[in-house]
Length: 86
Image (cartoon, rainbow, N blue to C red):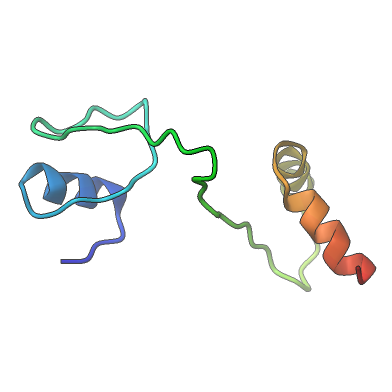
């Protein structure tokens, strides 16, 4: 089986229909029967992205969100390198 919604995946695993590597969500109660095993490998990571319309003017909220993300990730460094031609 294949699913894209994290809640669905958790439910399938809790029902005995597979295993999965998922992000931890401290705000969500885990289904009964689910065993969590934390990953402790420092090299384990997850890539996520952001998107916005290329030609539409950005709002202050979009600019603030991009700045917030850039301050907390390597995204800004990668974006800067890509645009500088390095």
